[in-house]
Length: 251
Image (cartoon, rainbow, N blue to C red; front, top):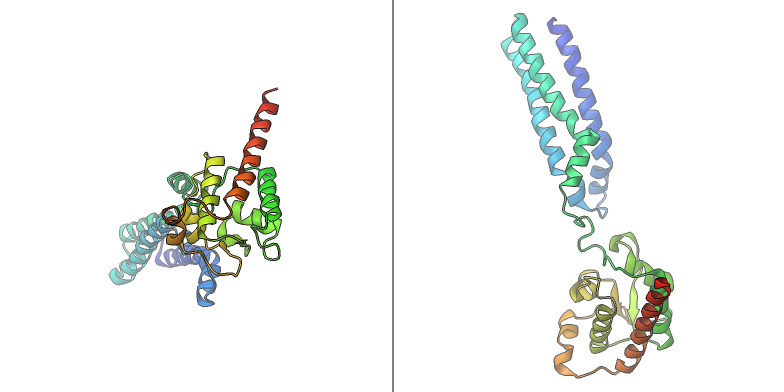
């Protein structure tokens, strides 16, 4: 192995690794320059970047040392090339399926959806029934909240759509809606803060956000809201439908 071959092989190695970097992170960098909204945390991929930094560091170090030493000794060139290969291996490893699957398996269950989806355990039929009953009692703004909007807000990731739920309810009624909902669907881990504040998807009829503290403290100010009777009927009907569905499945 001579110096020219070493230079040729290392050049190909750099072209391959930096080419992969441009292909993978090019769109990410363009979105950053254009100020587009992006889930930065999931795009950064720290384990992959760590391996790439270590690998490229070894690759550049081996090439730099070969030029700095300027030796025709075969052993020196061989050592430099072995260091380059070690760096190349570390740089290629993060792109393998085995590495990606390993990183994915180490993420806590549900971490990708944390605070980005209500993660409701509710059927499409129950959503439709709830929507139509809220509309029947005029508790939803019919002009601003379609059935599709209602379904998207409750079931899809928050940043994947522009839909919102516009309630025709005051703070006390919203608190009762939340209480009835969590009692009717106890298997859900829906939090009041996520529903009315963090998501920014459940708002007032006039387009303004609800004040979380107002909704949270509503029971201290009033025993029951002005929409208590309507909400009670809506969720009683949902509870009865759930019971009938369980009976039907048992036969």
